[in-house]
Image 1 (cartoon, helix red, strand yellow):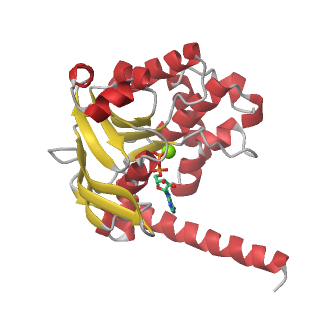
Image 2 (cartoon, protein in one colour):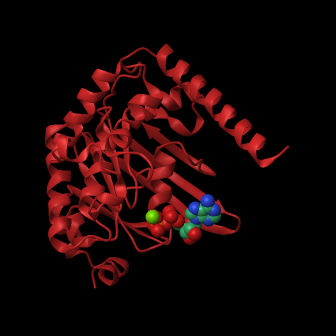
Length: 280
Ligand SMILES: Nc1ncnc2c1ncn2[C@@H]1O[C@H](COP(=O)(O)OP(=O)(O)O)[C@@H](O)[C@H]1O
Ligand SMILES: [Mg+2]
């Protein structure tokens, strides 16, 4: 096959897969068929994961309580992004459990994984916007891809999400990512993550690469969303100041092992050698 026909085949496959996902979601009904449950929103239990003979996570147990913001701190390569991928059901652990709203996402059938993901919003590192799509299409992506909502309803929800992250819809909707400042990109990434009104928000390094003032405005935004949208959030970051500012609890991951979980004050007071080292 030529490259062109391979590309065509690939895009056809993807289109069919998308159709399948869309149908599966439509079958679930407009509102999620998986109602919230009592107990922790996310529960990680004794997670272990290796890539080859490199241990990435070792015996990680952690829970996210409803309404709280939990930061997972750690240096580069500590396994922070991997934890988010496991919660989304994008990676599978070698052993241990990942429960999202009481359901084991690692061993659930695809339709249930999709239903669980529908209650989650992910803010990717570096915002990860689609370069060739306008702000409108970036923010509306989930609704266009996974719902059959009419365009005017999508437009209404995109505008609402942009307003929620303090962007003026008329000024930004038609811009391309390259025309945005770093802080605006992060805001658009957050608007995209909340457009389907998830109950759980996952942030991967939301303030990395930002100057101190912009970092502060993004932290204020994360705090604002926690109250206004009534979400439970996990923020993965290496930025201690930000974590302390926005979190109810913080966890510290060191080479795949959780060495601390507790309130910010407790962390400051901790005598643990890894904690002391990280705070330095
Ligand atoms: N798909 C993969 N294949 C092999 N190694 C990976 C893969 N994803 C992550 N890793 C490794 O797992 C470790 C943790 O990665 P990651 O969770 O991205 O760390 P962090 O987000 O804390 O910087 C790193 O050593 C990384 O190289
Ligand atoms: Mg990472």
